Length: 397
Image 1 (cartoon, rainbow, N blue to C red):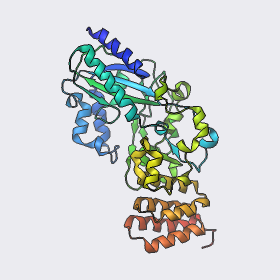
Image 2: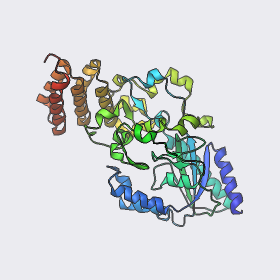
Image 3: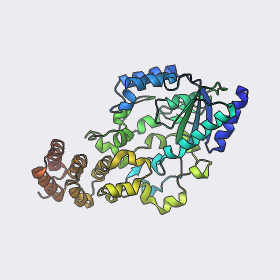
Image 4: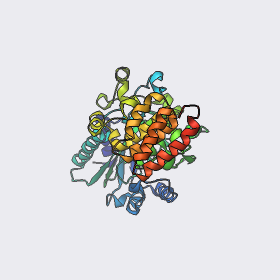
């Protein structure tokens, strides 16, 4: 089959499988690979070892190390946008905010099988066992660079891939193939112009400069990828985000104007009606989470991306959000969290109690200081007690 005809059939089949965007790029991203290397050298990847290993850096610069003989990369995109949360829920500090992509099923489980179907289609069309690799943001592939080269959109100042037709709420997936295909051109329509809204809106000032993100300050990194304590100076800036963050996307004019749900009903993760009926699922009350045990955590989040944070990570984030809320109604639950088996949770619960600053919170911290054996938690309790002299100066002690 001729290259152009095969490419066109692949595009048609991708749309049939439910993908909203599809494009094809040559398997070469030398400039992006060097930029990635420099980004890692600056330390901006933080503790994400899967990004900083020498073999991973080399593979991202040379896809031939991932799939020997690779010539083409088929890139697909699926919108995960759904209607916005009602303002009374979105602006309620007693609720935890979860990034939009994690509202429904784990997208890896949904998209990976469809990508494999598309790769098998290529095999049938070519009549040979074409070697391929399929990835949905889990492999050593610079997927946004390939997506831009394949014409799916452009890289915005917030480092996200922005589609002029769909915005940036997009899941991306790739198939690496050793088949020569007809390549798409980058979309000439896309540009940020002079807009810098995403850079100024970031709560933690995570953008070092346009197009460069310091992950170590990013709320998504802090709530998902960071496994240890969240730096104290960043905690007050996190608001009530407990898994990921959408701020730099929510503020984007492209997103506001062009975001819409996927065309594929099977891939739609929710509906506006269910948002009104089940707000507790996608913006849960913080007090309903802080005392979840392992079984409760699994029952609530099994099959969703939130599982990546694990219980200890999520409840750490919830404690920070409760501290930022600062309502005394949370003190009893936070006091019980001071006895959680996980030191990470105990330490952040102590910080939250210090932020609350009531007499009851201070008594709980004093009791915790007397019994606590973990050095990290003791430091958090001590710091919280010192801070509560200021925060709760008017409260009886």
